[in-house]
Image (cartoon, rainbow, N blue to C red):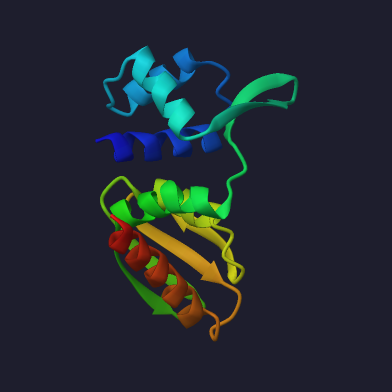
Length: 154
């Protein structure tokens, strides 16, 4: 439940201009999460969200992460949501647990894998556009390594 909630928080702060914990709490409630202010505060700290100034507003955004932080958060989100993937020319189609595609796509985007141009997510499917057909198997290998290495570390 915690990982799903934190995945949803990352998704929400990337999609909305959230200025307060109360706004985040209300958005989470609309998504079906029953949480307290204390839980939100802990999640913000654990996810290393920070407030940045954007268009005259102070909004929450993920702090720039280091390689080790990716192992702790983004790869965990990838691992928890991932079911399988297939290649369709230069597109890697990733199936996820229902409701997790946007969070997994945000995690993949945050990993800055060189050959990935971008991801589009639905409810349980991600279309990950890769630069070339030749790069798609390399991207799949990289994602499989990240998922496998994180499983070994658990």
